[in-house]
Image 1 (cartoon, helix red, strand yellow):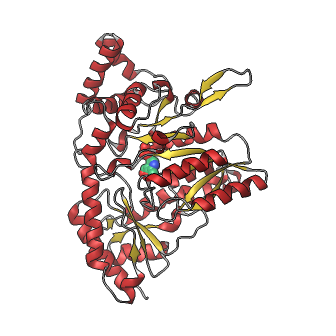
Image 2: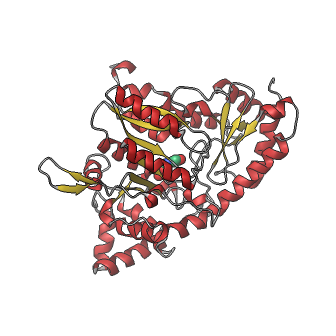
Length: 432
Ligand SMILES: Cc1ncc(COP(=O)(O)O)c(C=O)c1O
């Protein structure tokens, strides 16, 4: 049999950034009885036994109404290939306007196979030359880092201070890149409870970041995945809402507010692009064009399910999010309470174990008095029946060695309590 050398394949395939999800799934499959704080997957509440039919019916009725077509034609549209830009763009554009004052035409929205594809299309469109660099938070969501690696896009990490990106370092990074004949083309940022750090960027921080983007001439890729988990009344405006200069490309997903298996997300790219002949179009046209040679179109059936869910919540993304957010706020509060009870207090070990207190999102970042590597994860899984994610998987430079990420999204209250007891038993055995 022909044998291919790994070295002859794309170099991203040997990169730990791409391997991290597979690694965690593999560990979880070997310890099925362990309680896992590893996956950032949405909770299955209300999804077990999920029946898509009523949502599809709602969307079909909407198609008939809004397009003046027969039921047969509307149903046909769901089983054919569809437009690469998507079917439910208008619904999403309306929701963005009424919920978040993001005022863009339906054509500026591209419906994608999850936010992951939105990232891939956006990166492919924006990064045209080898000197263009992507700045990412350190630690950073593996999905964006993996996509950038796959596309051979150079990345520069910028410290996440716990309050957001280190703005001084970001500015210095921009200047240093220019001095080398390169440029920071875009900055990826998840301002609402980032994955993995749980960081929330303040209102003032958002304005500052937009100012820096304007001054240093880069685009912002705003990942809005966890914004829906904010405490009601405490939501901050999206960067895209505050953006006065067209600097922000907004990336969203229905994975956490509807269902992950539908694989529906979107990109909002209303930036004007001028072609060599001086004609103008919008960036979303380019994303849709790239999509014609990647996934062709997002499954119309899946879009119908999501469209129906949106319509059944008065066409509001915020209402959809609110319907799911309670579970995550409850779980996060339970996780933080359990950590306080089991690991709070004084003493050498107690003081060496610290964690942040995000007010939303799925993740808590916890520091250990030991190297949180794969071997330690094995000990935790085999001897204590509890899993977590080594934070080093989220650092481009392999740092973050003494940190772990705890995700509370997938678990039930009893599992969170038991899981933290096990985690405390494990940590209590660590040498200080
Ligand atoms: C920050 C962030 N962005 C995007 C995604 C991916 O979203 P999707 O499932 O829609 O591809 C995730 C999923 O975990 C995430 O944590």
